[in-house]
Length: 595
Ligand SMILES: [Zn+2]
Image (cartoon, rainbow, N blue to C red; front, side, top):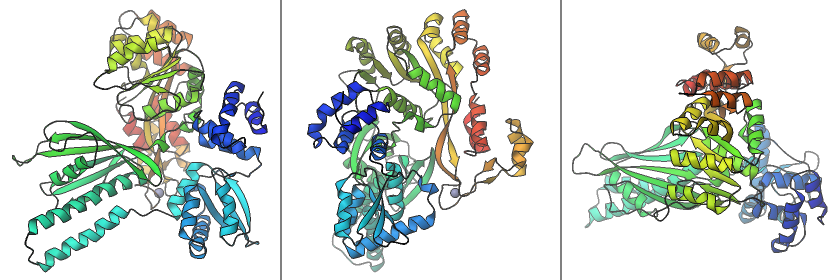
């Protein structure tokens, strides 16, 4: 048995099994005794439980009301009220206390209409003792505390109390100084050295400012590329599309690259003729962000100058989705995906081109099955996200991907994630693991699900092995989501194309199929992304069809059988997304055009 009421509640409601809870209770001493919030912390930190899941349970257990709205659902007047309370706090008490509250994700959200003493507070942990300090440090005497998801609170903070980017401010100021120096034409003895010095600190601020801005704007990558001989373009990839963030004029591209190299780890700043991979990390808005930096030499028109292209991948652990259901797969796909991972053996494959969200899906699937009783091994090159509760093999000079693959079986795993099935060795290993009672996750680069079977067959895997070792193949893409604030019914000129995709005239006339517009709340009419997917579950009939194959895998026949069982093709999945009002014609056509 477990001792505390909260622990019993968690077991009774099947958040955790009894064994995990007993282990967790033993660990509680290290986390500040036997309170329910100490238990919540243990579960989050030691057992990798999702923060929101545990603290929502804690709130329900203690009967705190919950506030589960996304930022889009909160009316502007309410955000304005929240901003006013925060501003009044800064005036009446002090800036430090306000910062402390925000740091603990405690958000004064509004004053009660009829009772000006009563403050409504949102918190990710309603039992956090810091909340009570509000009554002694501000004029509010009574509090109404709500639990809210982490993302909601972070989004509101970003809106009502955005943090300044001091590097960019410095840059603005420096820009003025440089301009003034030029216009005044003051004679300085070592003018060139001075210019270089000013220019360097300017570029340092530009680089550091750009690292912060990329995180805040939700960019997945930053591209720094020469534009001519004395300008540099900086692009952000947001929701899958590159967007120019800034063109830095009067700057030698080499100077900015030198600063990038200087402020990254693992790169040689004097090397300009070969590919280099480095990394950096910074604390941005109280979160440790990691950056993977890739530098490649590129040709330039000027023979004597060596230009390089820089791409920085932003690795923000907050973006890892640990709750499988949050991936938002459509009903049939989600049901069969869950069936395929809630088992102890077989291969689960996610396929699609680069940038189709494969690793996000795999991460969430893996988090769904990780628990302290299993040995989870991952083998990827490079490791992107650190997964709590998993042993992630380190690929490097001393151990290659192939060597790591060969050693997995000897390391007694229960669940294995192989970054990518890329050749016969990885394919054979995955099959061997599956056939010896291991659950194996991996990815492939194919356009659709049936062709993943052909790909593995061509790598040299026997048909009966393929048929009986795979549980499911998910082919997926990401489409941009329409902004709900500005989308409008699809214009008539596009109806013909929409009907060719399978939408009916009635649906179009009803005005429930939308197209993007663009407003201050979005990027060109889109905000965020959602998957479209083809989930090929291995029904017995599918397995038999694969075993029957003699020369080639009959992809069309397999597709037909799967569709009979309810599989949506990639395109049909996209059309469903249009019916749900989530995306539009252009996006669906774009991601399914290669079919
Ligand atoms: Zn909009």
